Image (cartoon, rainbow, N blue to C red):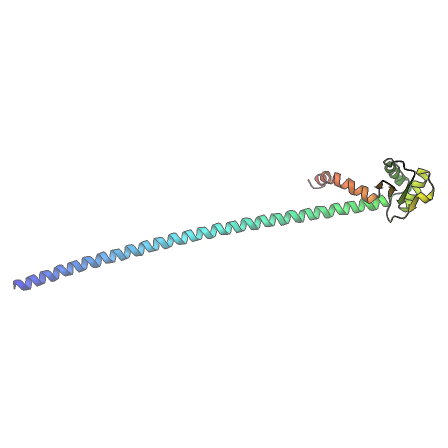
Length: 184
């Protein structure tokens, strides 16, 4: 009997240790499972944060690109409006009545140097005004330009006073101010 009690005691002790090991194993598995879930949750959180940051960068880049595109379109529209204004201004200058054109031509002639050996190419109205204004023979002034204004030429100098060129020069100097006035 003592042997049976000893075997039973050993068996009980072995079962107790097996149960303890099983419980420890179960707790270890649960702890590993919990740790795995925490790491997975942390990893998902980090991946979501990385995706969020990447999307924010992409959105910022797209917003910047849209702003640039809008800015360029706005500049194109402003330039188009200014082109239309200058085209209308040039047409109005070319269509001026003779008396008003004479005032402009008189003003522009003040900038010409005196050269005996010179000739002038001019628009039709401008040629008539210059012949009266400068009191020169018609052969020195030729109405060959398709637009009003004139080009003064001598052996050493050429001055372009066509209305389109005068307006272009004015445009370069006045455009920043004009843009500020038209598009505040």
